[in-house]
Amino acid sequence: MGSERTEKPTRFSTVSITAAQAPLRGRLRLPGDKSLSIRRALLTLFTDHDTTLENYGSGEDCLTALYCLKQLGKSIERSGARALIKGRFENRHAALDCRNSGTTARLLMGILSGIEGEWVLSGDESLSSRPMARVAAPLREMGAAIELTNGRLPARIRGGTLKPIRYDAPVASAQVKSAVLLAGLSGGARIEYREPFPSRAHTENLLGLKTDKDGWLRLTENAHAPSGTDLSGTVPGDPSSAAFWGVAAALIPDSELILENVLTDSSRCGWIDVLKSSGADIQADNETQVYFESVGDIICRSSRLNPIQISQALVPSVIDEIPILAVAATRAEGISRMKGLSELRVKESDRLTQIEKHLSAMNAKIESHRDELRIQGPTELRGSVIDSQQDHRIAMAFAIAGLSATGITEIHSADCAAISYTEFWEDLVKLSPGSLHKYEN
Ligand code: S3P
Image (cartoon, rainbow, N blue to C red; front, side, top):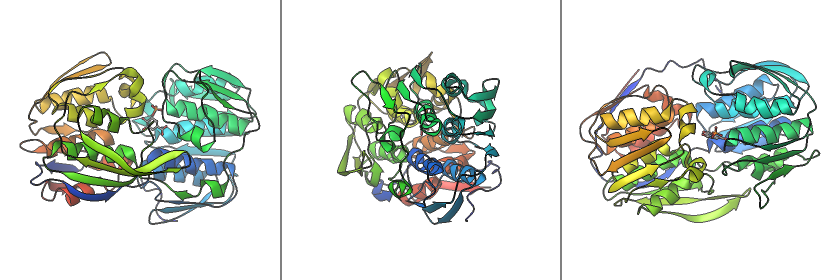
């Protein structure tokens, strides 16, 4: 197989960005969606049949999922953006390093809980600081033996047949929801699951489940995972990566971008609705349905923005796009408010603190109060030094801020963009030649 796993990368590269000298124009194809790539890959643990995933996500998190599958006995062949997953899940004792990938760690915790065996899951420094008790709690209630380290990774899991659960989740998290549904699938247990606000629905879509009118999802004890043939196919482009260019096009005068073949499912594209309601010229076109998810082209043009309003109920549908939407809000005319953002504190970094600190340094008028952000625009952003703290979405959001700022924006640990979007800097050079000034290793 290709290098689906490299040694732990040292991240110390710095890039400098200056303002875009010309409108951003053209078409862009984005690598496969991270959430769907990881889900479809992990679901191959339930089948011995070959699965071919085209446009498999190129980011490190997606490669981490493949690496874990390999540790569990699967064989992986990669060629370009194609991943061919074959063989049997046969290792019943394994140590799995999930590196930076919360989705891999949490979904695996669910799957492995329902299978006889013993596994240890670990992660890098950032993943080892993120909460895992939210996943372990329902799985323990189902009978899985899970030992965490102060509520975090490393985790030791002893799995087996599981008991049914009816779980009214305290937090809207697609990772927790997916872990419980997948534990039901592997452990043969009936699941009833409800979340406070709808989070991305990919796992239930893959399993053919729908919420009832009261918001409950139900998986029966003899539910089947999709077959290798059903899982095979093309992964649509990642809307969370597309969002950086959607905002860049909105902010840079006379821009027009067409982002092709992107997942446009509403549980992921809250950012399009949010931008549209603040007056942005953005729309999805040519939409088709693939596996209960809509896929289409996103057309975005520069526009004057009104304030951005995000309520708590909307947050799960824009959870990964808050950093780039906060950048957009600095250019909106009036006060933007984003509420219910506490989950941002437990992402790859404390994103709420990072957004406030870096946007203030760039001259924005921004205040945070508990889990809320208030941004008064429009302000002209000024270049600053941004330490991304190896958080990919912070590095990319502030690169876009740099494209619409005066002066030089220097981004430290810039190569962490590769966690979700390996081609980001290349695409930036393509769309805004002359803006990326140095790339040092
Ligand atoms: C994801 C769910 C979200 C999101 C993450 C990917 C998923 O996390 O932030 O990038 O694929 O299920 P939470 O479920 O913790 O909100």
